[in-house]
Image (cartoon, one colour):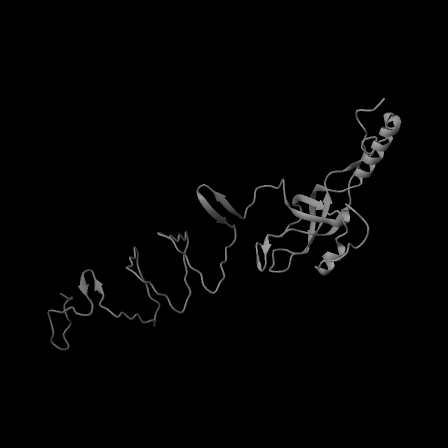
Length: 245
């Protein structure tokens, strides 16, 4: 009689019924020792968002081991797994894993320790295969709502941060038919030179710090009256003038 179900990691009476069941049981036992992919929790990360090379994480597999009575044995923490960063050459998105993140780890078919140490092609470090020791963390799954994110939707792209957004480059250009800057409290521009090419409208008062000088290459009109070319009704020296005409 051939069993229709062979226990994985558990010896059943039917596992010994015939040569096929014997071999199938041994194969299942061998497969049970192979690590492929599983969900893990981040316990520690060597990086914390700094501008630095990709680091390593310590993870704990979340799927417990069980014996033939169904009693669980939690996994211990696996140390020093390289983690995935979106990077091409010197271009990268730096978003390091954080303690408590849940994500997926995969496990190489051969020992990757020498490549981790040298970052070069080489022989496997040992004869081990499909081991927890040769894990790699690929990224988060089953995590909560982020408070800092880049969001892509049909309405467009949103970059949100509860603290600050910093753009740094030798040259930054904003190109669009319309550009709006909305500062609910204030807007400050600090620069040695500020140039506006085009007509400007100020809907509000303008004040200038004491001692500063404003220079205009053309005329300035205030309420329709030229500042440079206006005239007064009184021109007697020492006599106050009337308002400009």
